[in-house]
Length: 500
Ligand code: KIV
Ligand code: ZN
Image (cartoon, rainbow, N blue to C red; front, side, top):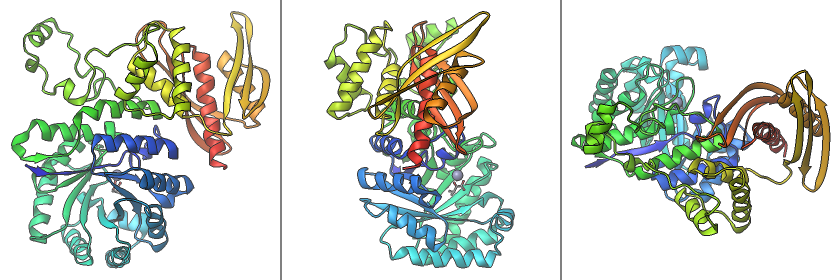
């Protein structure tokens, strides 16, 4: 079997999705899970984008051992310096440079001539070589580019000394046969000893997984992908789909180092941190992906699972019958569950999480994995200086003007306000605005039950504009007004944090 290198770009390209945002601590937590998953490279971010991105890449580089940590930069000295600085403490770091090669992007994005692009590429690689980092170079929008120019660019970067050449289907418009032909053509043209060829596919035609597999069959030995396929527009190739395709079709002779049993846990963490909704029918990790309803299928699966299951749920860590906690579960079972879910908390956080668990069992009979993940993420999200909910009360009903009283704690100071509103949530948000002094504009609001049952935890994910900044907030509670207040405060705290 030949090894294929897996680059996870959830923290960089995945974050380009309007639905996804991570603060630096969340990035670190997710990166640690990616290391447990066994990806070869973590594309941790784009340091030149701003302070948060630079800090997050530096934290991941400092803390996460095992995978190579990668940072993006345009072939521009300032951006490259920022990426190199962020990677300074990485056990193994990689700088990822990129330039468009299609005429349309060269002209309308950078207004560069092909010769200028070649010149930038080769100068930047020579500059990066002094850093001791691995170097990856992406030919952006390669599948709408002229082959002659692709070859000229690829030879230039090869001669300049890159370790990886990545072909990007930036607009997600390619189809598998084109991708396969392009990769085998380039591999032949570059000859033996060429840099490792890599593929990065977007999903605008729904072909990203198929295109990535086609590239690997044709000789690429690295792919970029995100968990759940999250990413800009229609998203990126889904990491779990490609990994499982290679595992199931072992006659391709390709294998990865991914520990597939960590896949479900990884997507659950992504959902808990970002609130992103993964559609139930999503391949490999969707909630309904292993559920059989038709009687004839059910009967057959009972006799022999392979009749209707190409992927074994246990291979991806999907819980067939999740162990459920309840009020009878003590500290040991709770800690056991945390370990199973991949969390290792310091003693203060562990105590806080356990107290939240005890509160929850007072309100809810059965505690599912989703509930535990949600409450732990809630505890981990607490930061110094942040506003937290102390208490609230609501009055609303037919013919009554909704009214909310909210009390918030910031450090040790308790402040409260009351407000009317068009509904209880509007009233509560207005009361919060009065306390914080910010005026948030709600752009989007969604609520869902995390598990079955009338006593389920409600999860609110909202998008709010505060002081010109758009942030996502997430909150969970058995009471939906409380979940809404927590989500709104999460947004407020993210803005506050940006002001540090
Ligand atoms: O889509 C794209 O082309 C990219 C590159 C920077 C790899 O994300
Ligand atoms: Zn991309």
